[in-house]
Image 1 (tube, rainbow, N blue to C red):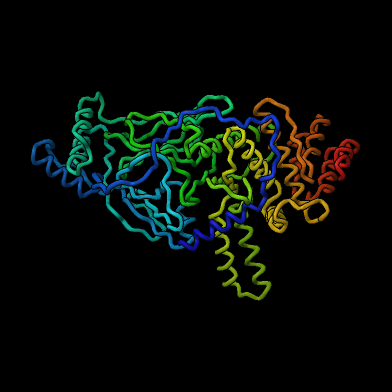
Image 2 (cartoon, rainbow, N blue to C red; image 1 turned 180 degrees about the horizontal axis):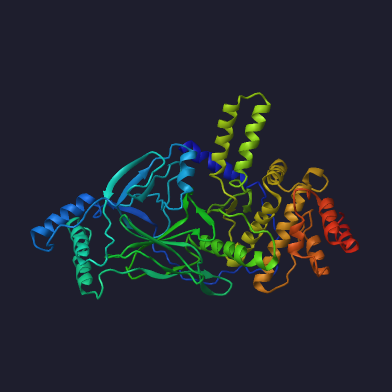
Length: 530
């Protein structure tokens, strides 16, 4: 397992070379100032002492016996295992993939029967493999090695007050409730409450807090886990009822089909724990000083691209199930890249296995090696964003719009094209130069990424700024075509970007063959030497 995770990290670092976008020139109009914003964290998140789980069947049965003895319950209730609290032991990358792809599992990189102190993100020391915990319904087929920590009974019959008495009794018996909490509980108009609230992030451009859209909010009291997605305004409503105040966490897996990974990589989506709060609900505001600020900002930018820019401009959408990995560490390898490694995994598996057989490796061994490469790539991101000192919403949006434009190109060109593309960047350790014919595919991809990323930024802010790119591939060519031809814009340009467009000349030919305008398109290319 440790070797697998180390391989994933190594590949992710290598991928920073792939489709690297660290050399964009900054617009003279983009703001570099960071307005003040309220920070929502008061201390680092960490685990405290181990607690006695009141939801274990053993504790529930013991509580029932006590309540029957003192007359608080008149008759026995139906107490039986409803859920299993388990620790998972993925032995290899195939095991990890099987649980990561299961959308019904809520994975935690820390045990659930410990006291939680502070707020923020759970950090795993370097070189230590994170542990994996979850809660599953009884009867769920756990596909990998695991340990059942406890059989649990989580009451769901909210219409029967005896179950509330039972749960309270178990919390009292295990020492998990204070006297003041009991007094508040019995003075409340309703014992059970469904949490709801809002998740917002500070936008440095507007100076306002805006909803974090489409992400998960988890509520948890020991093994009693509830979750709901936020809506377009950042509002959430948990379907679970709680007797006692739960712990809250913002989990960056988006209902639109993409996830943002944090500092522990592919093990779980980025999780921002915000502490124990009222069972009626809690409003989370993520300020610029929070570790979750880039995650929330990236989330909104990626969703904006997929649901707004794509239909508006009519370009290919990014593939579903994107994984965006934000690493909060400075790096000289590049600020962002779009290697699409998870999405090329299947094609790579076939290619590796085929080539090995061509070179005389037996079919079984070829498939095993190809499968290992596939599983390793599934641990790697589609988009990698390193900490590039982005301190404003607009800076991060610019990066994400650019990388999402690359992902749209991938949707049009496919995995074979993309492997050639990222392979050339790796061989060149960057963009190369126009004098080398093999750099043509790099030029096509970077022309489009810079042109359309900038187009999205201008559209979002209702501006018309043109960036003065100094790179040899000159995205100004596409900007000029767009400006001069009313019937050729992002949709038409993206439409011709298939597998045959691998250099400036084939790009120019494809545009002319599809839309005409030979004089204008030829002039726009020749103006920059193509």
